[in-house]
Amino acid sequence: MSQRLRFWFCSLSLAMLLSVIATLAIGGRPDPIGPARVLDGTWRFHPGDDPRWADSRTDDRNWDRIDLVSLPGNHDFDVGLPGYLAGWHAHGHPGLEGYGWYRRRVALPAQGDLTLLGPTMVDDGYEMFWNGKPIGGIGRLDHDQKVVGARPFLVRLPPSAGERSALLAIRTFMQPGLGRDDQSGGLRSVPTLAAASFGDILHRAQWHRTIAGYIVEIALPIMMFLLAGIALVAAPSTARPGFARWLSIALVATACLRLGNAVSAWTDLIDISTLDRQNAILLSPLAMLAWMAAWNDWADGRDRRVVLLTGIAAWAARVVGAAIHADALVTVGRTVFAVLFAMIAARIKARGERRLLALATMAVIAVALFITELSRLGVPTIWFPFNIGVTLTQYAYALALPLLSFALTPATDDTHAQDMTIVSAP
Image 1 (cartoon, rainbow, N blue to C red):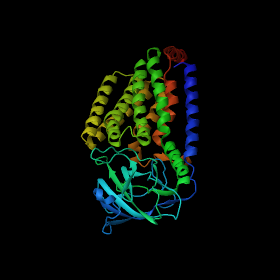
Image 2 (tube, rainbow, N blue to C red):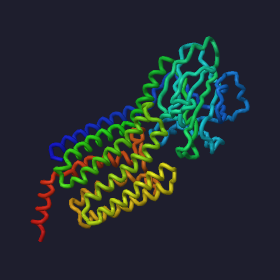
Image 3 (cartoon, rainbow, N blue to C red):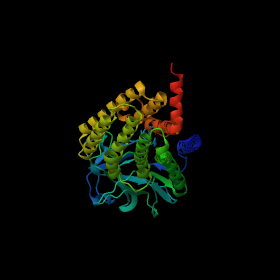
Image 4 (cartoon, one colour):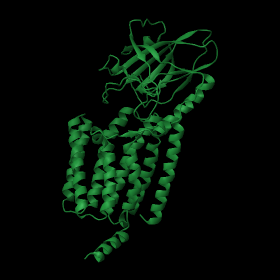
């Protein structure tokens, strides 16, 4: 990459960083205060699925009683959404997957049009019923389920006709087989009843927070796609064409991996099952293989082919393990990749060129790739600037991109650097 092109890439990266910070600052502001009531408290709950449970005349006195109350300051450990609750696994149903219903009687104000804001956190999809009539939700919960990421949802409620209360029923569905913890299941936050004039304001604030929660997953892929294109076009003229080509593959795979999170959270284009499969089986193993191969090509040594073949075997182990849900096989594949990264780093340190740049960049990439292992060692992996979650992986890739632009050195520049080394040698 020429100095001029590198300057523009780094300048664009800085502009993108400032835009991300502004978005985080806007999204992290507290919700506006107005005529609204969070519907926390005691709810009735029943596992399973029966369409009759939407009917306000259904007798739910024998259903479980679940207290859905979030302490002040509670938030989820991903985006930072407020009102975070423990799911049905923590409320007497530790092995439940699939459907579960919630019901409660809602007191209504004497007059005024009302809106209902759906829960912003649910495992995984939901449909709401007001006095037995469907009023919408997130995802498709029929026999051909399509469960997408929960997001802000607003519906205008029908006129109350002088009624003092209404029955709100929520049908939820947790996708089986995705790997859950002891806090998962069903509602992870509760709906909010608001005056129609204020509901739109609150809904807009919720969307600002949701956009901010995934804005980094848009900014990083944009810069990754750009750098991947530059690396691919410039590969023949760089000092290490193989490194540049593998780098372009790694950047594209990583960009698609990050981008899927935002697409799933903001739209209905990707359901969570598809996202989980494409990430675990396709994109994550491919990204790790490509990053390893890029640095393997950077390092000198006759064992580069052996390292690459070993990496391909580790990639195959990860793909097969993810496809058949064999966690042990996935762990073996990740462990082999970690060992290969250490071996390549040692080789670069011993006899590689531009050691400081290569090792620093490689270390940052390794942090992003092996975040699971770092978490198990007790390393903090997420922070909440402006009350919005930003992960260590996102920080690592943001730092790596400018460093990688310096690694794409034209062959003439690298040859000059080698000549200077030879001249200065004793």
